[in-house]
Length: 201
Figure 1: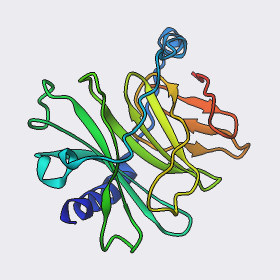
Figure 2: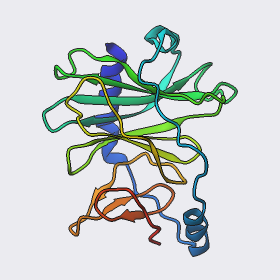
Figure 3: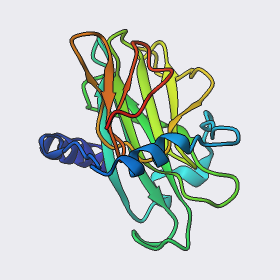
Figure 4: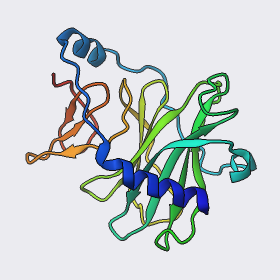
């Protein structure tokens, strides 16, 4: 699939340019930490229909890539109706996979799209130290989905959960003490496991 291969190349070229973002105002940090997202986190669609086929997309961007411990490739990006930048049409994110070294791709195997016409965007992928695949995206807060067996071609996610307000585009950094440092609009470290994050100004 040519679009998927193009996105892989773009991701590999742009990955070194990812920068950590930090705000210096302590009140801004405190405000972000206090805004706990409410409601039910948006769960992905695991059997996407033909409306998400390649020919239905006019544009796509903001790609992310992850590789499982045994080499299965996972790829995600954002797209939507209309043209890129047209915020009148809701955006959504797609998940694709390859088990043959990117010669072919299957998918979308999952889609995150709001049933309320709101934007879902800025998706990312990460393989954590336990070998689990994280698929995360912005949908009324940053929503994370964990896939315990990223070697399988069909994802089976744990129930989605909110990580924090803000937007993640980069991947977490694992510190020497086992904490994970993740930077949305600020730096949020977590104890090993990733179920809770706290603001660190």
